[in-house]
Amino acid sequence: MKKNQLLSMLALFGLLLCFSAYRAYAIDMADFPGSAQVSEQQLEQMKNVGIPDEDISSLYQQIEVYHLTPLQIDNYVKGLIANATNPTPKQRSKSYEHLPNGDTITPYGIIPYQDIAQKWTHSSDFSLRSVSGLEDRVNSADQSGVYYLVNSTAGHNQLTSYVTLPSLSNVNDIDRPYQFFGISSSNAGHSMYGDIGLVYFPSLGQWKAFYNIVEDGDRKQEYEINFTGGNNVYFHVQMYTDKVELIIRDKASWAEVGRVVYNFRTNCVPSNFSTTKFSKQINLAQTLNGSPLNIHTGTIMVAAQYDQSWLYTPSANYAFTPQYCSEAYRQGPTTEAYTKVTANFSPWTSDTVNISFN
Image (cartoon, rainbow, N blue to C red; front, side):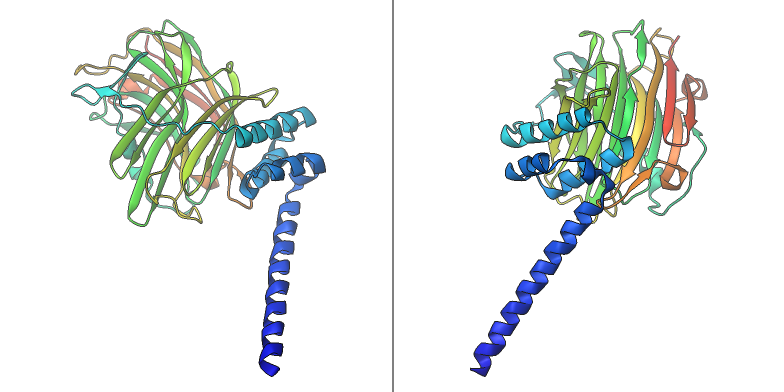
């Protein structure tokens, strides 16, 4: 009898622990101020279709940060439910042909090869660095274009920002305007670097969503993902242990206008996101065919912008201030090239960038 009583007491104790854990988690979810703006019906609908708690808490965080209206929340919730009930098929990387110099041949034009890893090699320090100024860099080995880049510190699982795509004029056929987020992570001997966002194809006269990701040295690409938005949108990139996802929303309504998903093939993201980093980038790349970068093609990008940029952990959110910046710089293969990039910024919550190859 004593043995049975002991087993019964242990079982009861286990149930109490489980109940306490559930209560604590429920309180944690309720502690997000944005949770009060989501109706019980909306929450029930999300739960019924299996939307994970981490996605619901992410919604709460964004409601708090951006003070979303009921319409914006409703569009966000509808998007989550639609993707849960009719999930987007896994986007498989395309088997693109490549030129000898590494450039990628897509149906819409050539994409210049870029060494993604070198953008992160200067920021191996994962501690808080409090970078508030923009550095100028020359890299003569990289003739692929010029760019503006702001890297975060490590330890975040999300980055969000309002985005204004640049006003474009005289875009030369060999030039490729970009606006995108960068991602980086390492874990258990695996490494991952990538770009995920929008690229402009002159042959189409429009932007396409894309990813260009290198995992353990193996590059995967997709440049044919639909984007139906205008110039004023919202970027939300979220890192999971098994995938990265970029959702692009209309700035006014928060209706989804683009979605990019890449599923990791390795265990490159730690569960605590301790090595995970993000960047904001605005680039003007160029197909070279072995020639040096031509900074006089006539292409002009005006007022590409990030505004109200925020970083997140699973339990907190932070304005992208200098405290969370590991480095910020403009780069080109020559001094003359990087001076084609001009920027105004409030470090680093907002950035406005012009690039002129005139």
